[in-house]
Length: 130
Image 1 (tube, rainbow, N blue to C red):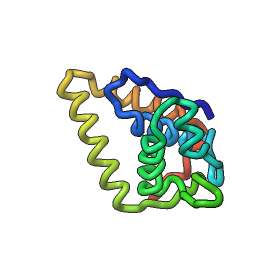
Image 2: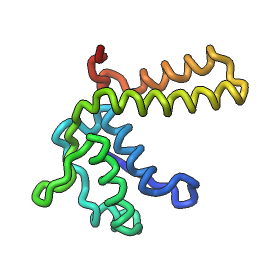
Image 3: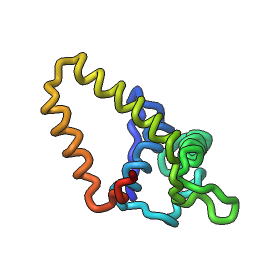
Image 4: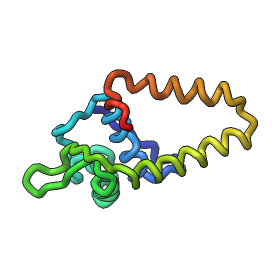
């Protein structure tokens, strides 16, 4: 897995790391049981504070995407977040879609982009939940 950070981005570094790890999971690059680098090692690779990496990992843990353990470190451990995740996801998607509409993007283009992004994750997509 190759992670990159943009030190000049307005997106916080911890969020950039979190987002890239989520995408790696969705693409099947990281699977259940995959180990992530230690917070100190990853921080040293990027020349950033290890607390920044720790914040990204803690966020992923809270969201049920990784498990943190003193012996094994950070490991991908996917849990079904159920209804709370679906409600949060729907609210975030609604806001992004509202912004697309407010900025004048045609619905067909929005749907095409959504489909293209979903397809980019390939066969790593989990089975559809009811």
